[in-house]
Image (cartoon, rainbow, N blue to C red; front, side, top):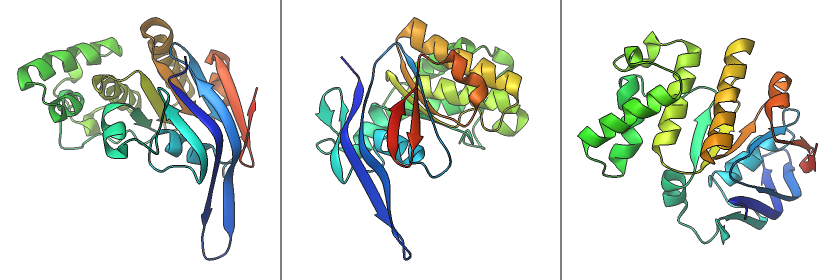
Length: 222
């Protein structure tokens, strides 16, 4: 059974010049244990699709289903906090918190005791191929690849099986990009995560299980 699916999803938005039909009858599903990519030109609708999957809005028509329940019926704040982990191109780490504190943060929001959160955060950081040398460093003291790994560790700390990533390698060199994608693929294949990334990086598509292409709001399976 899919963890997330889109059924006949349509979404449009308006500005002072025009109404844009961003998604046109999109149907697809995503399963745990697999790595997915959504590719397409800028403005094709892929980021809009990811935002609906992340619960930032609901479709004009159709449904986004998480474990069979429409996001229309869910408390979207709770869904975003508890059920979906987002990874961004810009990392979005808290600059005044150490790497360890950044990873502890979502656990502390859920009431995990600081001692337990610290221990688990250390384990998550090591699981993304970093050492204890980074624990007490601030984001500005880390390389781009290290910051992205901390962002991934923080996503793992949310304890959900669904990871959505918006251009997660956009600020990284090609070697680091492939290492990050390999890490996400390992989370999917070895730990049962469902990982969905929006990307312009054609150099990592060979590492995907399934690739979708968005063309003018229409989703096509590659």
